[in-house]
Length: 311
Ligand code: P6P
Image (cartoon, rainbow, N blue to C red; front, side):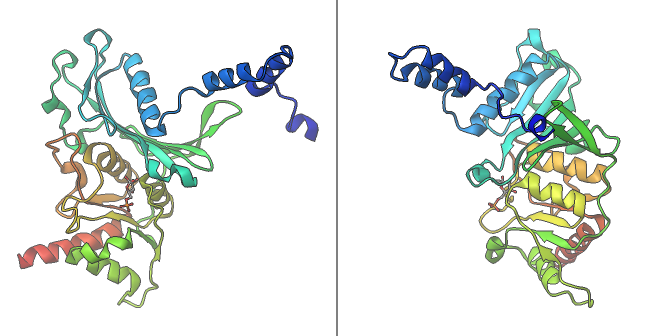
């Protein structure tokens, strides 16, 4: 039976090409090299390639009228003949700096409905996150996991490669109200503002007799948010002296992840207010973000409120 399970005699493109070569004894493998280059395609950076795949897939769906991509400086207005009523904001391969070391990376997306697809302008794209009608991410790691919300709770799906189907493995995900993990790049501690510094201090040296939180930071937003969603806790990318608006992008990182968190019973805060209430003025605008378990986010909101009173 094992022999059936792990067939090793599968015909692959490599074997086929080599078989072909053996029919031309005079060849010096040039044909193999040429064909393998064609098969491998041109060597492109994976994030550029993934962006092209996404843009082509979204345009050819005939359901989009404008696209906002982390990879494209300007919004893409779809050919009027191919338009549909949705705007899709996406980061095609977030965390791509982690690819070479095998850390999980992912695609993040958020979807808006556009009132009049034929005359859509950039102003109509710059909508608050609370007007998104759907959001999700696909994480490429030890398994391929898609997490999606269309405004009626959050569901997780895992790709079954043998079926080529995403199977619902995590129905109705709810984030625990409080967690034992905090997730932040401590290397930026020198530049944090007072509320963030105080909050992280509380995580490490709790004054209420509770145990310190554990620090988990992968440095790939999709992976850090996915762990936070399933295990609870808080993910922070605060503003700091070097980056007064933080690092993460509003339209295709902050909004989609905040939408999912709220749908799963969590919260997302910018340091000033609810993340989904933000009204972006630029498609690549950044914002600080504190998202995760509701009770944990409440604690950092209280510290920012305390600081605001002093001003
Ligand atoms: P830092 C990856 O580059 C990314 O955009 C997010 O996926 C991740 O959360 C963040 O930046 C990590 O940034 O400054 O901690 O390396």
